[in-house]
Image (cartoon, rainbow, N blue to C red):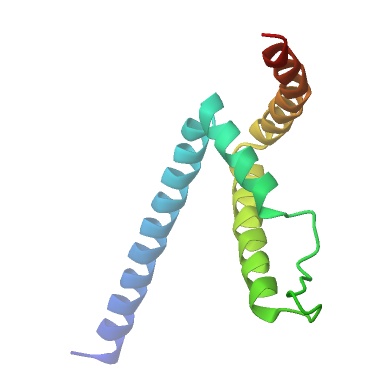
Length: 121
C-alpha cells in the first residue's frame, strides 16, 4: 500500500467522521426543538435552572464560618449544568427560552394567589 493510498483512506475516514458529527448535531437540534415544544419540559428546565442557583454566588461557608470548597464545587457543578442547558436552548430554540421564562414568571405570580385561595377553604 502506498503513502498516497494511506492518505486517501485517512481523508475519507475524516470526511465520514465529519458527516456523522453533523448528522448527530442536526438530530440533537431537532430533538431540542421537539422537547421544548412541550410546556412540561419548559417547566422542568425552568425549575432546574432556578434550583441550580445560576444567578447566585457559589461561595459557601460551613458551620464554623470557614469557606467550604466541596460545597462550593458542588454548587459550581450545578450552575455549569444549568448553563449547558441554557446554551443549548439558546442555540437551538431561542424563542422557547423567552417563552419558558415568561411561563415561569406567570406561575410565580399565580402561586401566592393559589396559596391564599387554599387558606380560605
